[in-house]
Length: 371
Image 1 (cartoon, rainbow, N blue to C red):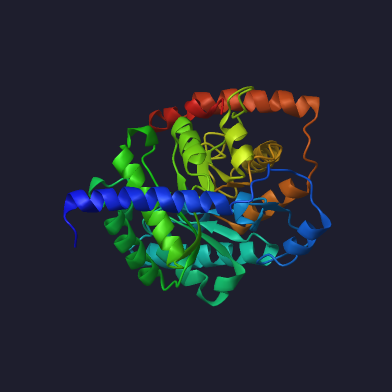
Image 2: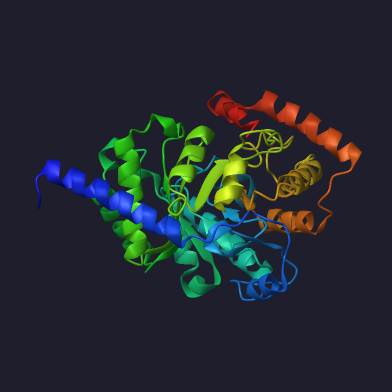
């Protein structure tokens, strides 16, 4: 191996050359709600196509993904599977008494999603990749996978070099028994601007290399720092092809210099995470029989309609914990997209309620009121 100083220069040259080459390959076009005849033909060939589902183009990837996708987290799942204690929303339970109903629930929800045309699953926790990969093993080619694994990526300081990121990504694929994923969206710090340029260099090199090796088809990242995301999209438009960022019922586009201006210009797909603000949107506790369950279903539908009203958002990613929740969001997709005056006023009221109910660890989400 070369000495560190030589390797650093070689890596810089590699990044600049690879990123520049990727940019030249991108056929940039603005995100647009218009669907051509050719698009209709492509949609019918997308994975788990269902004519009752709406599909939206994931930017320059050219993938057509369902208008609502499945997020990895399973917050409040104990309210659905009937366990007495809360289940960690990011890690699978190990207690056999809880693990069995948990695994049954996850299999039922994932398979139902695919049956109704939801064709993208986003891995975002340390257990989700293995839990979901096991479920979809026999249906791998019916679903698009967006992969990330927090413990193996940029949030851990020891992982912030390309060699380590690639080793851990390869280990994750082997654990999940996957030959490839459709999107490797590296998970950065929530405040991504705290990363050094060397961290960014490592991320870009790892993404470009993994794609070149055929281990992922497309590349991107996730962060809660919109200014940092905007900078990366502008600087590496052929590498940052997809981003995951928060977008709630209280989010709206800045009239000038918005993240979405850059997204449209560079034709980047956006998944909107935290659509329900970690359940701060709701009045009930997630129990199917709760007195506020019907009202919460209505609020969820209104929120999804509102988010999909922004064509720059490819799809929101809620953490669905029951078949009933899946079917409720299917109703939202079928409802008219444009909100009437009364609904617009209600959205404003819901957003105020939601901001006021955020727990201290989610106060950062207020930074995403204007995007």
